[in-house]
Image (cartoon, rainbow, N blue to C red; front, side, top):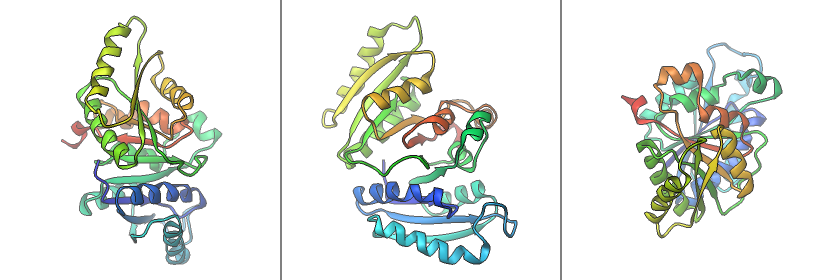
Length: 271
């Protein structure tokens, strides 16, 4: 997974600051990648909860300095006006971006109602991987340890390639996890996972088959058990419209996971 240019999509509120240590860690570990701190100001002059228009230049400069203090040595800023999801995706396409990092604003009411958010809309529509950081997530604790959901599809194999290369750049570890439906042949799944692990002999990798009807809960529980620092999943294999309407495992993880979630785009959504 190439990391030459990382975008941190920030609303410049305190919750967004939880993204900055993760962005700096990834940028410095991947060879001093460029970080663009991107703020999208809504069309409304001062919508509720937003940074006042007159404070934006100071706020984005201050946050860029915070990124530098976290260890990022190449930081730029950009301000756009309009719909956040649309403007972030436009910037991604125009600036050769490799990863978008967003903060997930959540609370008990939002979780109970499964409300959408800008972070989830970006996650669902981005053409590049998106790292969702929760405001309760602590700073990164090297070495990185990824729990990687594997469903033995082509999109899952692409995810493995990307995460393995990122783990190598971070000198981290990967735990491959297949969540088995009741009645599935565990030996067949174990053999398939072992074959995938063997394809990366230079990468420290573990493999587990976890029986469960709930993929999202099984991945979260495994992450706790192995003390992972990140969960990686492919975006839903459904079409984009279906994902926008009914969500996916990645949506559930974005709501419930206690650690950052890396979501890889599904190539069919780009067609």
